[in-house]
Image (cartoon, rainbow, N blue to C red; front, side, top):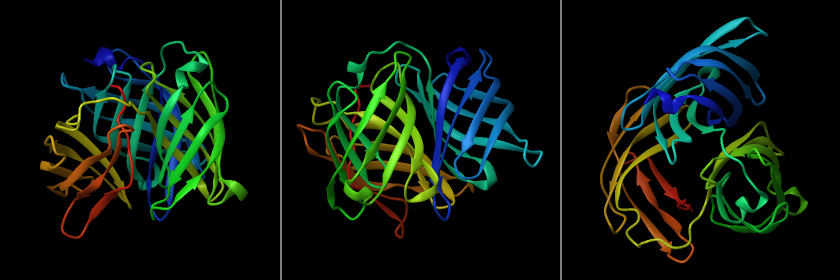
Length: 305
């Protein structure tokens, strides 16, 4: 219901134009779904204030809406459009496809600010898609006890860093490689009340536009057919954003899939998503949008919720 939207939320936006971009902000939503306050830092571009807006949610958790944004530097107003999203987990996380500032389109993640936390809440193995896939093991912050990174080309690199967690759920930290190659990133963020997902955003040494990403705590034990069922899917692509659904069988085969993009294009997904290592829950496979466009999954993970 609209009441499930009520509260204070932190959020990230990310996608790709000519380069990858990222944003980080916060907003307040009342019990009727109206945006009452908010601000977003579009890294390398501008900082906008939210003046109004409305989120809508169906009884099965589908989210749509828009946010009115104002940029004081140029005295301009924009409307950020949420094409489609879903509220998931303990009603503390919303993922959506949307248009952002200056015609940017991509993925947004809203994370509700609630709960109290201790440093042990980060203990475990986390998966982070960022210029490839990070797998990070944490045991009593701030030191990260192990870190590996799979590049888009499939190379595996060792990394290191630190991370901290405050009692109200705020995150800060860094990840880097020897000699800062291929990059170093410093980030801040927030963890959800379920303690199995967090959002981060910050600077990265290789580009001006910053980074933002969703990070999931991996679970270690699950049934082999855990992927079976109906899933929502969101994919940022250059200058656009896809959103749709997948129906997956117990073997990981996509039985049925439909997608829409921001330009009202539509089509069907095909593909296969497999658990390659049951002990660690590693994921591989591919998803095709058409005969010409296919996405290779180089890694992933499943969280507890």
